[in-house]
Image: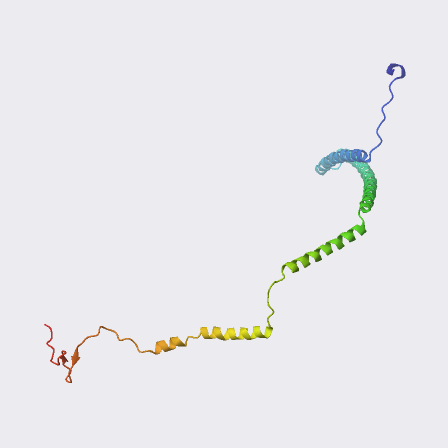
Length: 220
C-alpha cells in the first residue's frame, strides 16, 4: 500500500516558544563572538596606526579599520534586535505559563469545592448536637455516681460547738505535755560530791585521828 499511495508526510510539531528563545539566544551568542573578533582586529589596526607616519600606508590601514568598524556596528544592531526578540518571546512565554498555572489552580479549586460539598452531605449538624447532649448527660451521670460512692455511712451528727471546745482543750493538753519546768527543778538540785568517801577525821588542831580519837601514824 505504501508503494501505491506513498507515505504521508510526518506532521511537524507546532512551534515552541522555549525552543525559539533558545535559537535566538544562540544566534546572539554567535554574534557576540564575531564582535569580539572584530574588536581584536580593530585594536591591532589601532596599534599599527600609532607606529606609522602619515602617508598612503597609514591611510590604507585606516580604511581597513573603518571597514571593520562598520561590520562591528552592523553586528551590534543585529544583536540588539535578537535581544529584543528574545525578551518579547520570554514575556509571552511567561504570560502563557501564568495562564496555564491559573487554569490549573482554578480546576483544583473546583475539584476541592465538589469534594467539600460531598463531605458536608455526610455531616449532619443535628446528629452532632445530639451527640454533644448525650456526652453532657453522661458526664452529669458520672458525677452523680462519684458523689454517691463518696457518701459516708453511720456517722453520728456532732455539734460544731462541741468540736470547737474539744479542739481548744486539746491544744491546752498539748501545751501541758510540752512543759519542761521539771528540767529546771532537776538542774537546781545539789550536786553529787566527787571522790571516794573515807572514815578519816581531824581533831581541833587539824591532826588526822583514827576512829578512836588517837592521832594517826603516817604510813612510811
